[in-house]
Length: 434
Image (cartoon, rainbow, N blue to C red):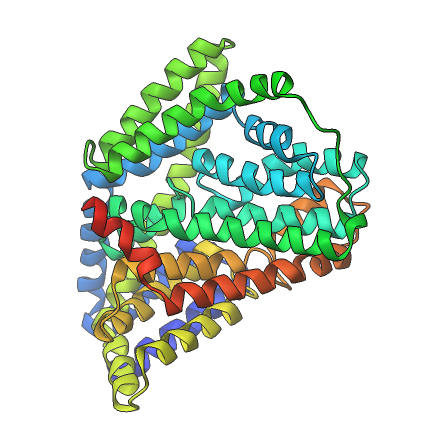
């Protein structure tokens, strides 16, 4: 069997393993090991595992992942998790659909702490959904806005998905964070425009809440001032070159500890819980990263990507057509794979093709995460939808998925905009020299 056929067989085997529920890190590692054993010999494959494992866990830049995770858990412990929605609701709640608009703002703000779509939708929904239901919001409209808004957690820096992509693709995490700012902002604006248009069409979807005075709004604004200042200092310092990614994450952890002490409520038990949660999550992600690197090595040795790239080039397809085809494949795979599995499966295959077509790997990383985000809300998997359903079991899944449809339309339009105008992604890193 030729190397490229072994590579294709390995991809199909990985899809099968994921379909039957094999953990993504284990599946990637097994396919990578088996493929390398066939291509270069079993002994060389085993040696390669040892080398990859040692090189991965000893990489200095990999420390950014557990540190940003710890920063997030310390901010949670300090009680900062719900403040962003409350602040946004104080300023927007009196408008038609104002609480839905506030949920988008809350998701964007909280995403800058958590770096996770699922954590964002779970936390903001626990606060925003009861408020919207008390205000008489249509269930599908409210849950659709929350499920869509939660996807911002995967793109707003410090995004865990972008960190993992940067490590796997060997790209600058600082550049990826800078590149994500404008796409994340425009994504939030697209969602807010969708909410406004829906409420203009059917005002009963999102009734107005009571308007607060400026005196009543200020406490809500002060409640997020310290966390917002920490986020701006850490992410801004990283993007303009004050810190390396690992230094920025370290400063973030120290700042979160000081914030927790300033707010009060610090206990040794809560600190130990934050540490243990961080370590458990980090261990899982490290296994996934090691497996992904093994899989990427196997794909590279099999020369599958070179053959696919030559096939695309020989067909004289434009880069735009090629990226649209990639987007369709990603959306199809996103119907049954979770976001991390989708990214780790496709990056070793699609990134070399994109680079041979002259596309920036930084732009591709944002495109990949943005497409991956859509998988969090489109059926049948739609993990964000199931998170919300678990918190509001009286709202049928069908109602939530129907409520998602206008926001999916906004997602596709926004993705098309990012493809058509790469400068939206690449301009800020160029200006900052990140």
